[in-house]
Amino acid sequence: MLSTPIVLDPFARDNAAEGAALRAAGPAAPVELPGGVAAWAVTQHAAARDLLTDRRLVKDIAHWAAYQRGEIPETWPLIALAAPGPSMVTADGPEHKRLRALVAQAFTPRRVELMRPRVEAITHRLLDALAEGEPEVDLKGGFAFPLPMSVIGSLLGFPESDHGRLRALYESLFSSVAAPEEVPATRLALYGFVGDLVARRRVEPAEDLTSALLAADVEGGALSDEEVVSTLLVMIAAGHETTVNLITNAVRALLTHPEQLALVRSGEVSWAAVVEESLRWTPPTSNFLFRFAAEDVPVGEAVIPAGAPVLISYNAIGRDPLQHGVTAELFDVTRDPVRHLSFGHGPHVCPGSPLARLEAGVALPALFERFPALALAVADDELAPSPSLIVNSLRELPVRL
Image (cartoon, rainbow, N blue to C red; front, side):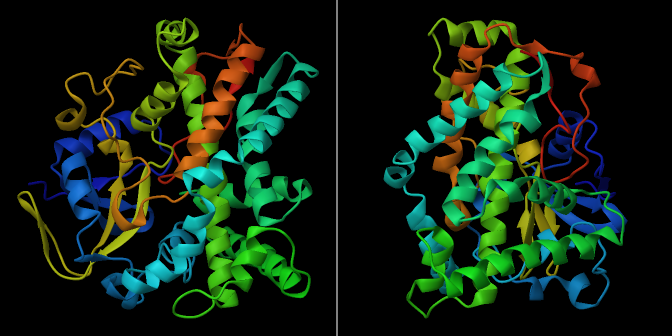
């Protein structure tokens, strides 16, 4: 059992090496987050699958001992993710069911499939714009970001003119190295943006999910404005960031593994297989914050103590050889389908995963069909990672079309 915490790199300079170190430390390992904040990381597939349904790990921040003692400042870079307000990601049991129900209904496989024409239209509009522009572009900023943000914006009811501002705010929100004064300002700006949207829809309802959340009378009572705001903040984050990173990481993986790309182009392997292998190999979320130990929880030879925060390290779990075999470190689109956990597991599994899969499943083949000579514009080792313990992505993805 590891006694010295592993210090997680806030700049995420080598997620693969960090994931390997976490797995080697055991199924659960003590870690140190920015600012010296102590936590535990779940690092292996089997342990994560068990703990994601373990009722001793709860979402209620009242069980985080250090936070309740006032040791976690409101300027801590990850505070808005650890304490995001009342929503489906901070509740358990009946309360979680109440807050999640409406969101889950909006993202059933049948309803998501009805979104396909909209996703295809946005995809081709963006590709047309790329084709008319410069031969070298940042594919993340010009394609991977605006596609899911346009989809979630149309669902929730905010216009394209807000997308740039939201991108900057969420990049700040997910940053592990944000300056202390930036943290509360970002949080205030995001709550202000969504609060204004909710206030407008209270007065002028529209045919969007924001209005539906406000009008719904769910079991246990209607959602309060505070609950709607917190839910929308989570939905915007998960509704765009996961897919941005999925598309970005998948394109990078294919361009740096031309033999794998050739298999897909030949028709030997489906684009759905590319999506699943990308989710496993470079999961869009590196680490998910937080669950809290309501009592001591033994995991292997370790014991997560009561009051400790627990993060799920999808970065480590995705390449666990105990689950994915001795080739777990390799990007292999021919891999036999083996369940990964990159969208979570149990009651809190991501309700938007069908939409993320649809968006990536439309975007990737359309991109490579439109630009068959697509290539990185810089060496792979020159690509700069996003400075975040949460999102697994790049600052930019410069390509030659």
